[in-house]
Amino acid sequence: MEGFQKWLVILGLALVIVGLAWPWLRHLPLGRLPGDILIQRENFVFYFPITTMILISAVLTLLFWIFRR
Image (tube, rainbow, N blue to C red; front, side, top):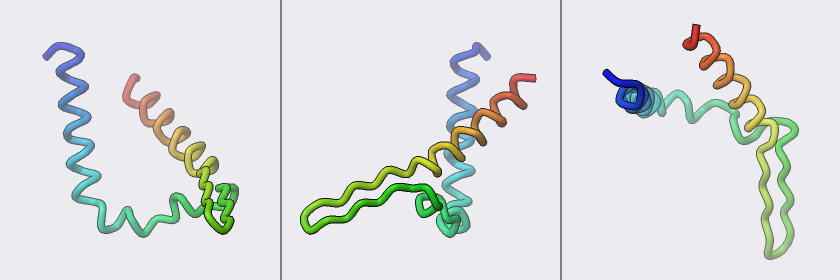
C-alpha cells in the first residue's frame, strides 16, 4: 500500500476502535480537568479546554514517536 492509503486505513481503524470504546472513554474527565478555562455570564459561556488539549497533544506526540520507530 502506498503511504496515503496506509494512513487512511490506520485512521479508519482508530476511529472504529474509539467508537467501540466510547462507552468507557466518555467517563474520563477530559474536558473537566483543572486548568480548563470556563467563564459563565448571564448570556455568554466561554470554554477553553487548554489542559485537556495539552494532555491530548502529549499523548498523540508520544504515540506518533513510538510508531515512527
